[in-house]
Image (spheres, rainbow, N blue to C red):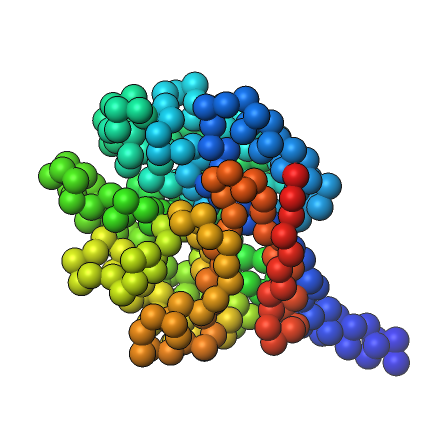
Length: 299
């Protein structure tokens, strides 16, 4: 009888996934002023008290009109490493694509991208005081993947400013292989989710894929939108896309809103940002059919 009870207990514990939480934020700190960095520090303190399993920053660690100098970028990396739990970061357009702007310092965007990869991504683990191991994509260390509680999480380097396409031939040459890598990485995430019978998939990126909507066929974002729709419909379980970019906090179902290809299992969460320094705590209950619940966090 004791052996039978032990066997039943082990079987139950392996099938049951306990709830956990993560925090999503982005489009901050919009630096240039000490008070903006201070507000971000206060938000980090709130997150630390909340003690999520991990936090994800979806990019734009500065505004598009402030300096892209090394010191400005590294200042935010230092702040990232004050998160008590793991901090996963995916780049935004403001910290590399838009660095050619005069107010940003007229940098070469491709050089800034190289700097980000060298200083924010080691290809093995997250940032934060207690980094966690990540599976990363060869040649694109910013694209990461991990699992927890039967949920697959992945980041994609998909950014605003039309995903970096078209401004110069050099930028276009960077875009096409990165776009192909993003699509391959997304498909791998869903393939893993199917192989482990995952409860849900969460995808993080910087770009608002539905601004403007509908996208033009030549948009640098259209391939990602189409791939997300197709993979979500095929997966059939909850899919959450978390992004920043437009500074409009919202939770909705954009495929149902903007086109005829309904994907009732697909939701998008846009995080606060810019001058609204706040974050979203997402509670994940793999045993709940809805899987996700949300709460606003303030500094």
